[in-house]
Length: 136
Image (cartoon, rainbow, N blue to C red; front, top):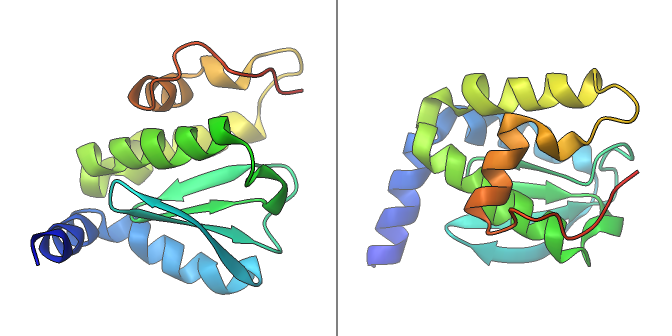
């Protein structure tokens, strides 16, 4: 009972990003369950964008099918970004989500994606301060 109540409270606290997740879900194709941790449900979508491995939106994390076996990516999204979502609540999209998306879109070649503050925070929450892999 307590876990269900906590899930519901987190869901409401993170409502803006949960609504975005629910709106995006139908466009991700067939969803396959990946994991559940820290009141966050992870799914892989058959039509997840090829230029990204994962995204965390409130109580949900979505992954490219090729990233499902990548523990770094799973932890980064489900243990990292989902923690910031719980911390910032309704401000998450402005403080973390939008800057993270803009950083991805305008990232200069040769710059490590994970040096940006949103990604460093997620890695720190997930215990991934040292990168586990190098991504081109």
